[in-house]
Length: 303
Image (tube, rainbow, N blue to C red; front, side, top):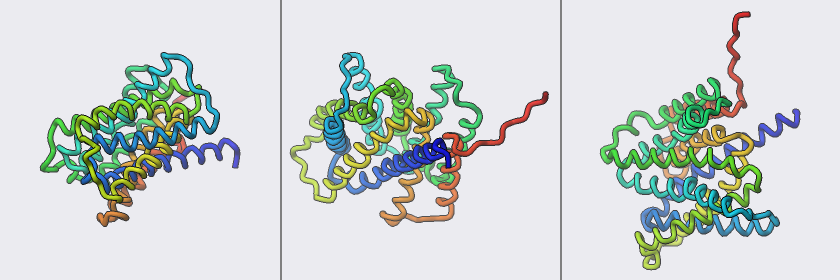
C-alpha cells in the first residue's frame, strides 16, 4: 500500500471517528437533558472541552496567535461552530420531533456545496461530490422514514432553528480554512474558549445553574460531552478541514445521524431494523464518493 493510500485511509478513519463522537453526543444529551437545561449543558460541555484543549495546547508548546484580527476570527469561529448551532438545536428540539430535527441537521454538506459553488465560486467540487451528497442524504431519508416529517409537535420556527444551525455548521466549515496555518489544537482551544465565554451569561440568565442539583449520571454525561464530543472531536475536526476540505468534513453530518440512530438502538433500546442497516450502507457510500475514496466512472467524451 502506498503512503498516499495509507494517508487516505487515516483521514477517512478520522472522519468516521469524528462522526461517531458527534453522533454519540445525542445519546449523552438524552441522559442529561431532563435535569440540566440546554444552555447550561452547552456551557458545561464547552467549558470542559476548552479547558482540556488549552491544557493540550500549552503542554505541546504550540504557538498561539499574536494578531488581534486572528483572535477576532477565532471568536467568530467559536460562535459559528459551537455556541450558535448548539443553542439553536437545543431550542428547536423543544418545538419539533427529534426525528425531524435529526433529518434537518444533516443538511450542512448541501449548504457547503451551494455556498462554495455559487457564492465563493469554488469549482473544486464537481458532479461526483454532488452525487455523493445526494446519495448520503438519501441514506438519511431511508433511516428517518416518512415519520420524521409528520411529527405532531412540528413548528415552522423549530424547523427554521435547526436549519439555521446546519447553515451555521456549513459556514463554520468554510470559515475554518483560514486557520490552516496553525495547529488544530490551538484553533480548537481558542474557538471553544470564546464559545464557552459567549454561553456563560446566557446560561446564568436562562437557567440559574447554581440552583441546579443534577444526579451523577447527568453530570457524567456532560463530562463525556466535554471530553469526547467537544475536546477530542474539535481537534480532529480542524485537522480534517485541512486534509479533506470543508465539503469532505461536512459529510460527517450524514454519518453523525447514522451513528446517533445506531447508538439509540444499542443503548436506548430503539428498534434496529433492516431499513436502518440499508440507510447506513447508503450513507457510507455517499461519504466515500464525496471524499474521493470511491471514484465514479468518468464520462467519456467524443474525440
